[in-house]
Image (spheres, rainbow, N blue to C red):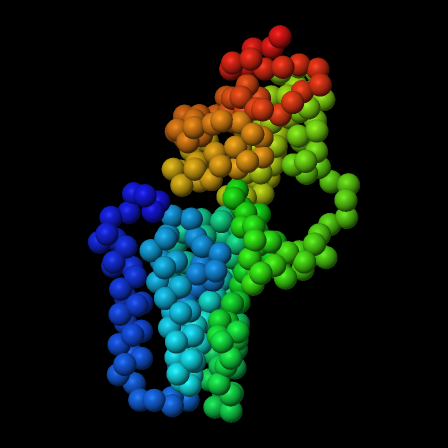
Length: 286
């Protein structure tokens, strides 16, 4: 996390891109046929726990705009997750983690080479500033991760919201709004706890590629069994606070905490108004 990152970790990650590409910009002659920088779509949507990596990629985007403003060619390739080459292809745990964030689409080598073929075209004119970022591999709608990206807050990304809405499934499925309604009309704390547990089950099954089927989830097993580490625990906690208006501490989603105990904490602390029962303190009904 950014708050736990020391300056050396920040500098090591940023400098290899910032200093490296600035040196290339300074050393290479003017009027190059192309100047292509391999970057990442994380500069647009971010990757949790990788603020230094995101910053380095953002520098590449800015350097491209600077070069274009001087009449020099440049383009950063803001790619999604490269799945069949490089570090992600060699580390399945890291690949699962990146895809779990939900905001990046997989990119393969064939797509990457096709992108290079386009931008290495000698007849390609100087790009405008609005064309200066080649963003390829951002998931429409902000993804399905625990904490989705609110694209509607960014004019640049808002078209992805419209695209996602057009591709959305027809109404009729159970979504988070329905879970809230079900909690509001539940007859008891136990019933509300079951509803909350089902909601968390479904969210984890959607968000974690290691949990494809929520029928295999044992609610009495520690969350860490399902790959919930400190970073994902933070995201899970933030999602619960946002969706259920329940004050949950990060440590309560970590370690030996189970889905069963977590669901009871959610129903015991939620500020959602109930038609038939009220929570006082930590799960006591009136």
